[in-house]
Length: 443
Image (cartoon, rainbow, N blue to C red; front, side):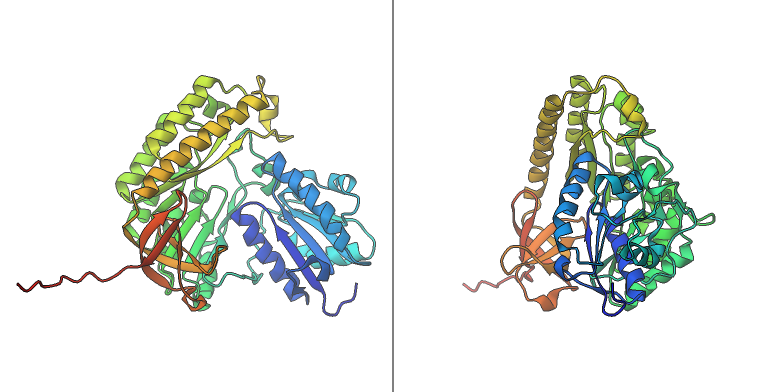
């Protein structure tokens, strides 16, 4: 592979942290002279940044890598990076013979050299955990000039029995607060006004001196930052200090994504979630008491080993009690190496599938009802990008509701006051909020 005008194509799957990691990868390779291309056929290096949280995500990636191999040039490199690479390691080379490179989330700093070795015929692998790695010196290449993801924490110490994250991301470690603030200041100077702080259990952030409440207050104080979001928190880590900061700092948006996974305490115990149904509900109540307009979304798993119909009905009732604004819902997926593999009484797939349909229906009915009640109200939105539909623009409220509006691309990055005019049940349409004038009637 020539050292001149090298081109890299990266395809990203999974969570927001993978999106942020792709930006780091592009920054690292940019320093090594690579140009980014949006077309795999134009690339010298093709990388697939992967998710391993569920089996269907991995199966999709196997299929996609098989499709991408036809674009691989002579002397070119096809690599799998990210969580799936970390989980399967060198074994991935046996499963996908046309892959040249396998690199986990802590190995991105070595990508330029690993790619050179792979281009020379070596099948290169780096899945070593590096507890010190935060890529502080890497200038991420961000394609979104409106909103930015900022990783503040890597890894996880909770070790839920169904989850591969400790196997793919390692132990929890937090960045130094000063480094995070410096990064946000740079983003703000570039025109970014909305920042989302990322971590596997982001509200457990602690750099040895500062906790998550300190981080929220300091990031929000950066000149130019108008909105502050974070994901994903753990219910156990909403200390009074964190809740107070959320309520008192106006830049913190009125939305929290709070994974519950199950509404049955006995299932939560087998999941090793470390909270009960009652303590989860108490956490939601504390948050809503402090922030009355808070929108709450969640993650739910159905069909976890040993889940009975009664357990499932408890999850349904919790959804109705909390009245989530939305939820990501999944059937339990067996992940080799996780403790849940050893739990007996697996739920038949057809039963889990039927429960998934029921919980999706319950979530959607509640979301539609809540969203219908918002039609006619006025909200501040941040205009993000061109929408997929027609000539509309996509924007978001502070509560993370998607609103489609008319307008030209020069509105992207601006804040508008919009009256919601309709909803599909999940997204909204809106128009500029008119100034109400009282008309005098003469007669």
